[in-house]
View 1 (cartoon, rainbow, N blue to C red):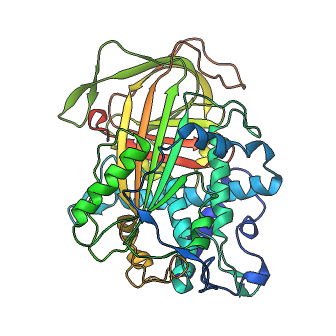
View 2: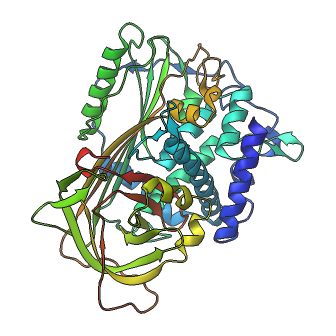
View 3: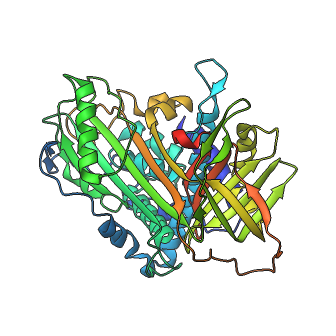
Length: 479
């Protein structure tokens, strides 16, 4: 199974490289050196006597999430990224994109034999990759090997089993997020106050479960604030879910609407990631009156809409029946809006769009003056990675017998691995949007109105790492 997964990811990697620029083979930047490659366990698996701790109770006083401080921490090292750091970030970006495309396809697949795909789910490939990399840090044996293969890194290197270095992966993800938020490529700059990306990771354990300190320390390179808390997960799973929601609400203050669903009574560890993305389109204003949005062939609704005119990258692809508009959200933050042509279902376009050719067709966009009208968005999506793996025909990766001796010397049964995203796209003010630097453009604005279901993606310009992939089907319901 691991070899099959790795082969698929290698093929995807080769396609990504061929489609854009040539990278030096990245895997040696992400694995431990040969002197450590014989050890298949996680950071603490080889030292059972390592220090452990019991997480404090969930009711213990916790400081609110300081999003400004998190931004400072994530962007602080961008200016000092060396060639190897940049290579590692580019390699991780390609791997997480490939995994994101694969999992996005799983979400489009018919569910429960009814021939109907899930609608509107917003996927955060970078956050998903980070969750799986975190679990890999605590995995041992075949579990570690299978997770490494899913992440796309070969295990065989020079005749021995090469161990993925999860700390390097998390550091590379932080570099990607830092570049995304930074004011300028290669320098932290002042950033953009209209652009925020904040992440909270919660490790929720049964009372008395001992976590390895080495594992918890290994999570620190991540672009997130991490809390470990204990609570009774077994007696009343519904109440436990409510307590976790209250904890997250108290720490973040975010306006979340989707409640956490109960886990199984025998789960001893939940790994939940919460991401909030806030962006404002430069120069966009909110229309005074709501505009009509076609939810499906028979239903319409009035939704708040934004309007902006500027020079954006654009392409009309008649062969594949979609139109793309590329909108800057910051120096390195990019929003892709994809409108299927009339008569084309979004899932038909999506099947041909989110592929390993992604970097190549980005280069085929051209600058145009566009008058863009689109919904003002507040979307929330919650995805259990256990479900995603099952949809991808990989339910065994996190099953009850999975080996997580690197997380705890106790019996660890991983339950839900939730990735929750709060996505907010709003107006900014009267300043003009950033303009592309190349080519002359038409003076007459081209009208592009997103008033029916469309696709979107948010990515980082330097590495092409995808932060979000989704489909907007009903803006008022946030999907």
